[in-house]
Length: 246
Image (cartoon, rainbow, N blue to C red; front, side, top):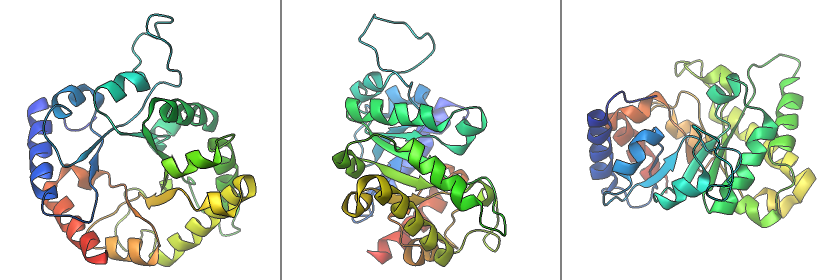
């Protein structure tokens, strides 16, 4: 629920849109609170526009009300391209893997590109978190078409890493191990070729100080920053690093 005001949302969007024009090889996507989308999506932009959630059904207009919810079709008609699904904060409030799976299918049908968050809450020395993550991946990405995997971005978001400083955060080599594991699990359901179709990005206390290690050694396609996304100067520093890797 940030930023708190429309004026602040406009200021951040304007600053990000201005700086994004200087980066030609790195794609920047913002996912503001849905209340600001009608203002932001109508402005000329070099930034991709996304949203933070959709409802798990997308009924024909007027068939069922679902008061208070927002459908994938409504968002698509606003010019939205991406949608974050299964964020750890939503899962903490009761969103299940099955619900996220439904939302993926609804998003794809509407022509939105899902950014699907997965990740373990904590790590144990015996490695039981691998089984937890495996079960999450299998259910979240259940019964999709192989070709649809290429339309999905997987955001590996280990909950234990959120809010950590650079020293406590996940290191690139450890992240690479996790991306290999995620693709291995996907391969069990869809085959090796299809398992390499989704892009994998990382979310969890990313800053200009660790983004080089995260992307280059972690072998991911990008990042999903949280607090840093509200600070255009920080985003600029991160983009400079990412641009240098291309």
